[in-house]
Image 1 (cartoon, rainbow, N blue to C red):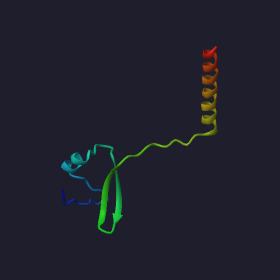
Image 2: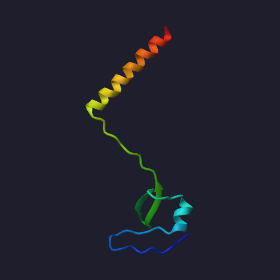
Image 3: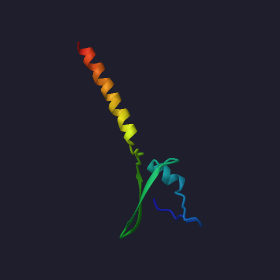
Image 4: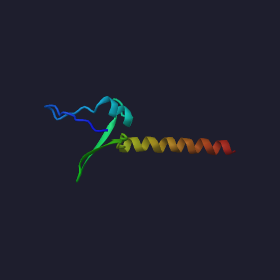
Length: 77
């Protein structure tokens, strides 16, 4: 399926509805744009949020793991 798409003054382009539907792209979806020797290739992509843990957050995890460990030891008795 080939379609002509215009780029607006902001550099944005809109993928036609039929193409979005065929590729399973929905609002908020992520697309990977890659430059190749043949031109631009657009591929559906997946993005995962990344959280950088502070020392305080790591301490919270450790405390919860400690609680769980103590709880499991009590259950074994």
